[in-house]
Image: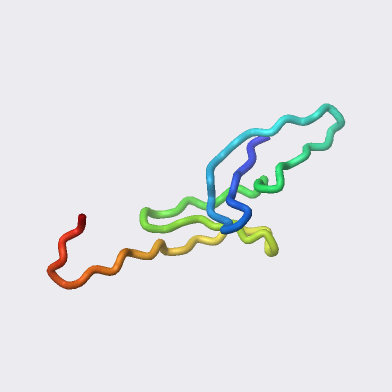
Length: 73
């Protein structure tokens, strides 16, 4: 079964993984995973899993502050 991993402290999406059925018809999920498929996100956004509401959230990734005419390093 495909599962989706997230950081348990921040909720940040970590990627896909798989889990096996132990043979009793019951799949045991790791505490840092869900079977809820995350939505597609556009560049510049980050996925977070809201454990309390059991849903994915898309948030805009903050951009670094730059002064005018300051070059990016």
